[in-house]
Length: 246
Image 1: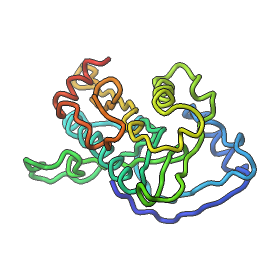
Image 2: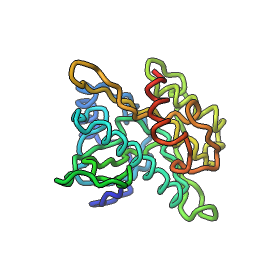
Image 3: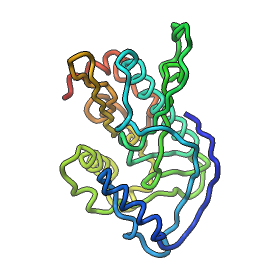
């Protein structure tokens, strides 16, 4: 969904020691899977977006059992809607989207309940999703006739990682895009190469929420289609496939 930016900066230089110390503290507590920023060269450029408090990342967010399924659908469709909007506006690919890159905030739910016919990406289901961290993204302002695309090359070691499904996602993207300068091209299918899973307790049972997009496995998508246009047989069929994919 749309989020108001507070400030925007473009800076260049060596990563400050204060921010490295904060990164290390986060890593000790949360075990970051990212590259320590001291690896970047002294002439590295950064885009800094200052945003309001966006809540909790999907990995840490606690869904309430009574509304978990409706909120899961809302998060799923809000994420796809945001990606489709960014594709249209800037030929955008996130290329590193996972459950740590989606922030969730609780929103008010109508006292009378959500009206029939409400769009599945509505915030009235009690949750607002915001996509963050564009460090590995690709974009190009001006649509097809726009300027030179901006993109970030992946470190080769990323494609060799093991122990987490996200590394398989990176390898899927590499198989789809190719090598070297091919990564500058607009390949929006990568926006569907993301797996978002969440578990909750319902009574005495552990239930897996269907927050999965696995385009190469679950959907017959085409490289030219936008994320929100891909048909997977409708939401119910998609949820059934997701529950059977574990």
